[in-house]
Length: 359
Image (cartoon, rainbow, N blue to C red; front, top):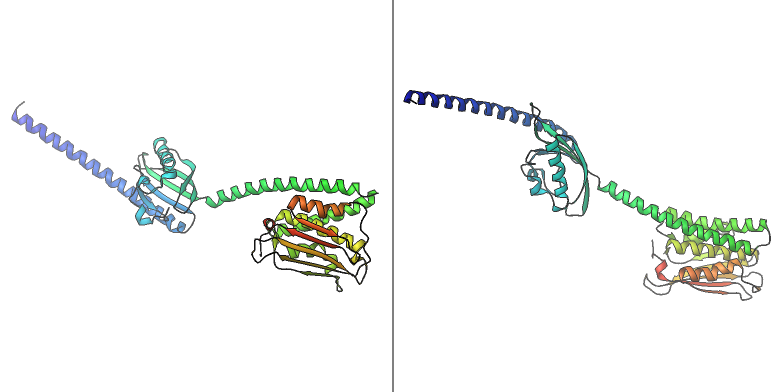
C-alpha cells in the first residue's frame, strides 16, 4: 500500500469516526431531551403527590434515581436523587425490590409487588408498581415507579383477623354460658312459663353487660355503670330504694359478665322476697379497694335493710349457684352469702387481675 493509499484510508477512517461521533451526540441529545421531558412530566405529578402516601419516582437502567415526589425512608429528596437503591434502601426488603425492578427492565413489562421493609421506626409495607420507560426507538431506558405506603391497611387487616378470632372465642364462651344458664334454669323451675320468664330475664342481664362492653370496644366495663344497668328499674325510680357508692373501677370483660349475672340474681331475689319487695326496704351496694394501690383486690358488699324477715333457703337454687359457685369458679372470687333475719348480705372479693383500675 502506497503512502497515498494510507493517507486516503486514514482520512476515510477519521471521517467515519466523526460520523459515528455525530450520531452518538445526536442520540445522546435526543435521550437527554426525552429524560428532561419525562422529568418535567413527573415533576408535575410529584408536586401534586407531595405529602401523600403515594411516592412517584423515576430511575435509569442502573436504578439511579432521576426524580422523586416525596422524601422516602428517612431520606430527603436531595439525598435520594442521583443515588441507587443499593445506597439508600434498608437491607430488609432491598433484594426483593431490586429483583422486581430488574425483572421489569429485562422483560419490558410492568410489575407489581408488596415489599416489607423498615424505615428505622418499625416495619413498613410498600405496594410497588414498576413501569418500564422507553425512548423513541422503543428501547427500555429506565423505570417509572409508584410506591404506596399500605402499612395502615396491613395493620388494619391484622387487627381485623385478631378481632375475628377473638369474636369466635367470645361467641363460643357466650354460647356455653347460655347453654349452662338454660339447663340450670330448667332444672329449678316447675313450668314452661316460669322457665321463659326467668331465662329471658337472665338473658337480658347478660345482654346489658354486653352493651356496656361494646360501648367500650370490649376493653372493659365500669363497675358503677354495670350495677346501674342491672338495677335500672329500681335506680331510676323517683323514690329509689338503692344506694350505690364506690371508687371508679373498670372490670375486665369476663368479670363484667359474671358479676352482672350475680347482681341480677341478687336483685331478683330482693325483688321477690327481700328488701325490694316492700316500699320501706333499702339496698346498699358499696365497694372499695383492699389497699391503696390500684393492683389490690376489690371488695363489693350487697346489704339489704328494712325488708321482711329473712328465711334461709332450704336448697341451692340457680341464683345462689350463680352467686357463690360461678363467681368462685370463673373469677377465683371469695364469696360470702349470708341470710341473717334483718336482711341478705353478700360480700364478694374480686382478685385485682380482673380489674383495670380507674378509667
